[in-house]
Length: 625
Image 1 (cartoon, rainbow, N blue to C red):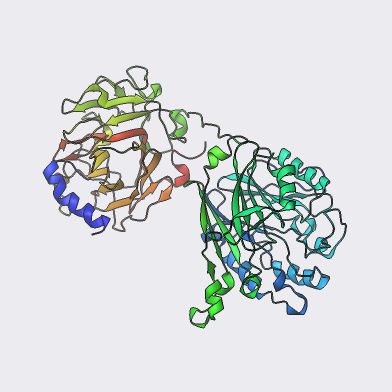
Image 2 (cartoon, helix red, strand yellow; image 1 turned 135 degrees about the vertical axis):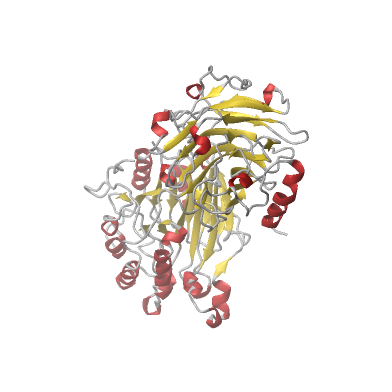
């Protein structure tokens, strides 16, 4: 029995038994950069979403065996580039970084062929390239002067790229500034052997961009044993001592050159972790076949998921893949497929602390069509100031700040103690008011408190046939203790049977309610004004101990529920026009069954707003000012 079956069973039987319904600005260029160039990072084309908290970096290591004199075969790399372009939207690729050894001999012919192949991705996905020891005279550092590599992959190649920030005076070191996850990130692409002046240039780039988290890429950084345990190479130790350890911005350092791949975690001078990875597959079948490593950043989950695969082999007909192709499509060992746990806010706090968002006045968050807006700070109460952790008295009036007269009043259920509902200073980081209410509702025995509109409030009879948006903030306690199955978040009182509805689990359910199931899924049930139906939305399991923003959006035809700005999967396709309200009060904190309250909510509820039209996610209360 899956969760849906259990939810349906609970809604038919449990509720009748318990009488509870389930219910930035311009990037400065450090001195020594390309003359006259100052990049303003902006998202590229191909539907890349720079604001999404989920984005990817593609890391491309040593391709030298694909560009090896008369043995060259660049088709695997072309396939990789075609993949990155075609998948830029789905994987939200922000950038690709090559780790050096583009070619085997660094000859003008090999470099020219490679430069032509890179045209497959040029202008479609931003990227960086750095010199490996096979691309130039390996006995020199970045002061070597002109080379075929510099002619093809020097600053001129990248100068029109929106991410390009500049290069060192010699041209062999460069940096890019990406816009991803709603913020800017720095990528340093350093030569195989960085001179003292090159290190000074890199430090100046970091100093010029002091709040940007940085990813360092170079060719020779670390080597690993057969178990994937990595340690710094001699050159890597020089980079660590001269640049990485003293610059807290660098949280990820990536190198190629050696095989097998591996990784380690080092601690910098600030006491923070720096992840050091080796990525190189030239020893694998077909010289690595243009294999890439995808770093999938998830700023919501605080993880970087890493996977390694060959797009060239992936594109082949499975029935026609040779055994070695099938074996090399994807690498799944612990050095090739893994996840990094990174608390981004905490890790970056030393150089880019998150500035708490200031409270916003009610006038700033009442778009056209706002019918009701409640907040639980001093501005939202008509009785007195709000002192955290003190009970909310039954004489308290929570004002409807929209001015439409939908004020809320407090009722404690079943002789519950005053502490069942208290003021709180807890709030979602993007919540307009920095306050909430703490509900201690629960079962056995039923207890709780509710906020309801008066019997004559205009919201009681609003039908919403043109659409609506209902938003609220909530937080479930951690640990989530006790039985709180089917507790209500908000609802309208009354019975859907009294509205002439015949399709639901029971005629005693209310006509609209937002609830939490036993599995902590959200459940939004509505009996529309114009249809005899009860379309129901179900979310994933809500997290505990973390604030969540919920928005229910109806465009006059269908309803979609969003959690933290993301559309949930289980939204019904049934037509849904309006809400069959009955002139009964609107409620925050519980849901009725047969016009009786059992328990109330368990957790925190913050700002709640109802708008008489469908809003876009960018217009929710979480939106930037």
